[in-house]
Image 1 (cartoon, helix red, strand yellow):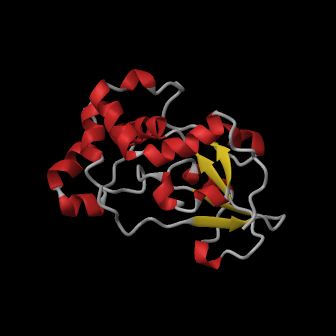
Image 2 (cartoon, rainbow, N blue to C red):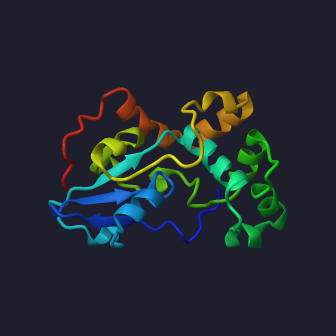
Image 3 (spheres, rainbow, N blue to C red):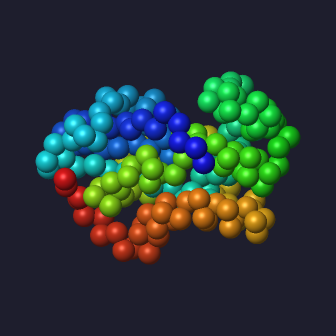
Length: 189
């Protein structure tokens, strides 16, 4: 996957002066609608800042990206269009089946499906929040693309192996939450 220039990081100072980070396409759109962020780079974080990262299972995230682009998006992805008009057309094809779509999409870096650990390379320093917890925190997120919570039914063996390889570090991040090895204590810089 070729990395693009849109790996921006959104960080916002809330009313209690805590700082939290939102990873692209892991609920970022809904959160920005309810809590507009103030862009701030990691290099600008101060000692003692508290950063939360919303973590999503990357296998589920790919299903949501596919559903979003094949059902909802009427726009375009300029960097992918420039690199490969054929791939761009396929990524936006409403008839594209999941497994073929995923293999095509993963030939290109895009913020919608870039590994979270690339966007948050220092994730081990920050508090991890599973995506399914954010509604409990009153952050205004609503699921927009599909009702089911199961990603397993969408994958064939080859696509699952590819996604597991591309997102190996993201799966490590997700495992911390799922296995309870993340203490959920505030991680301060």
